[in-house]
Length: 213
Image 1 (cartoon, helix red, strand yellow):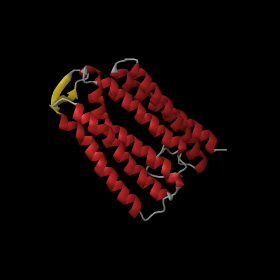
Image 2 (cartoon, rainbow, N blue to C red):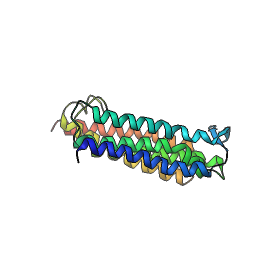
Image 3 (cartoon, one colour):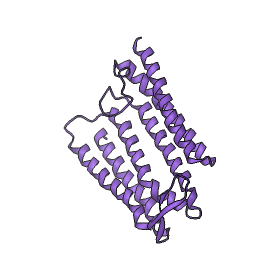
């Protein structure tokens, strides 16, 4: 199986996964669901349960369009592209599932929905980190930790992105743990922003050292 076929089939499988999860949730939800929240966790707007289908539909259209691009891409698609493509697909699957799943889990306690949103945020960081750490792509303008240091040479690029990827995996898991322990959403956001900056700085320093060797 070629990498082009593997990526296309992975995208199609991700669409099927999204709807296998979303459709039973949609049928089980009441007609009116929380649609917007304030910073303190209170529901500021209620809406039709049809709203939970918006992101899954957007993802479906985007994924099918991506399949066409993969098949029609004039550039060669190799094994090096597969981890990145699947990691990005995983991120968008999580974003497509965020609203319907978090609404369903918070059905008895709407204020807890922000906790589930934070869990999804942590999972997004984790999957992105795995994609970066596993990537074998050379320096490019689209994906990875792109700084003057990491773009200096191939050694700096690979080491910097590997360290950054592992750092984002650890950061994502920490955000998930913090959210599951019931910490305020502001803590998760603060950890995400601060942790991302620290990971990027450390990866840049590490890339500078290895890039000179």
